[in-house]
Image (cartoon, rainbow, N blue to C red; front, side, top):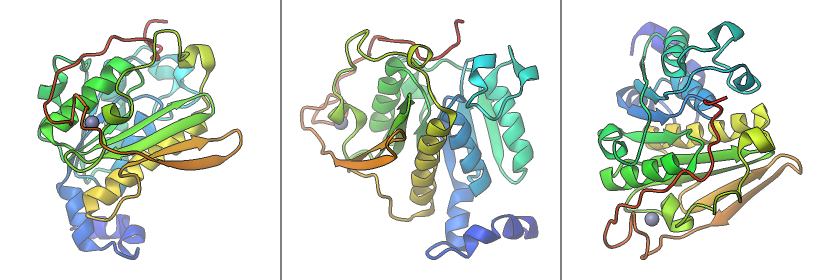
Length: 265
Ligand SMILES: [Zn+2]
């Protein structure tokens, strides 16, 4: 670690259980963040601030004015520009000690397995079911730990998936909800601070995991409800019937039941 790094990370280096060994583990880590939107902004920002050595941000969307109640890496003059590159540029300025790369690529069931290979962790900031299931299956098959999160209206969820050890997203939700069951965030709304909370929780889990520390959301689904300020941890378990992490992997692409991104406005 150079002197700048020692100073920059000094407040976390004095934490109990956290020291130069843990910081070095973060520096060596290569992490994929899927999505540079409402969740992707806090996720990638906290990974950057903590000193994760290499961060790849996947997003194919462009900035819209309606993103700016929550996507704090962008300004009004960014409207129309691609998010992945902008986010990578800003985060690189915030922490020049690390490498941040923006990848303008739409993740699909066909390319997820190849794109999300070779990472130490994936932190999921995507907001539609087709991509979420693709990311889960790719993480499980490639045996990359996955930090899941989702948010809508005043509620958010998070869980940490360690392939081979814990329940995966598909163990808990084998099928997406039927079309029309879940409103999109354009129909139902989303408060910026709620994605902030969920994204910060995902980042905290990923950072602790990468540093070699215990994490709290293995086999647990955290449900955060901000209108009553209720935090609830629900016990979940692996399913032997799971098509992703059960006895035999079965590829199962999921139809996009609702589009939550505002990319086609
Ligand atoms: Zn599973």
